[in-house]
Image (cartoon, rainbow, N blue to C red):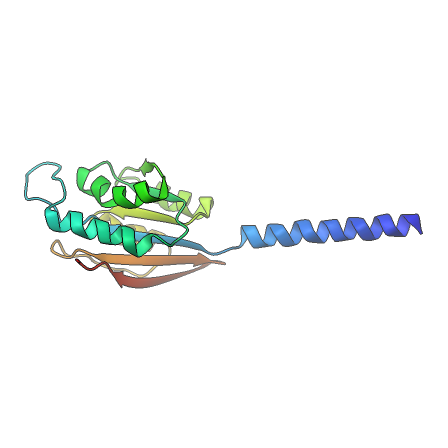
Length: 167
């Protein structure tokens, strides 16, 4: 009787461990990708324009109730300024990535399995979406405010488009 109780308890513990593992390992990951917002027309590493700053504040409002645990940005000032309002709100530091290392970034995002915001550029954001298994998109130089919500779940990638509007 004692042995059967131990066996039953061991089986129950194993079930709880496996069930907990299956919930954590296979939960969907949500990534939000956006191109930096409107920039000043300076030749080298321009900051956000007043419109871009206003849109970055709107991004903070749009994503404030999400469970984003990491924020990635290139080191370009316009990307940093797009990401900073949400980073401050969430108490997160920016993780910098190189725009030339998107394969590595996509791999890390898949491996980490945490919800994140990634701020990039008109050429890098569509490429990152493709590397994550999404469809081909293009972003024109004058297009600002598109927020791509990417859900990675059990080998499938779903992309939902949102718009971050100016106030």
